[in-house]
Length: 90
Image (tube, rainbow, N blue to C red; front, side, top):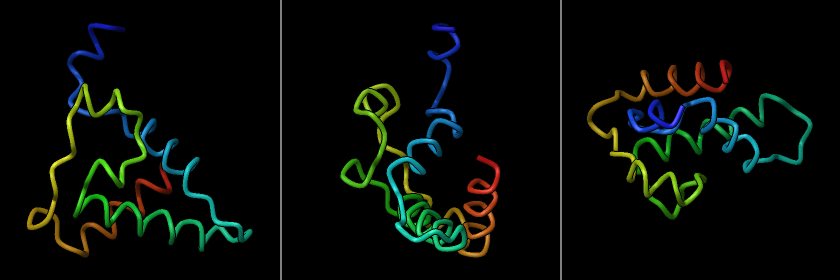
């Protein structure tokens, strides 16, 4: 398992989404609102990542560094589809 972790380039998406969903809580019992708030955070972070915005444990930044921005790499329509799929899947 330790050798497997050394080959990772980032935290597993399931772990990342668990963190995001644990930290971003909407006090309205509406799944659509929760999804909108979480995916808005995800879109912002993907385009303009920073340690200040990050929700990962500090050791993740030590091991993997800061995520590179995806500005100019992912089109807005693609980003919308990606974050929606990731939210629904994880």
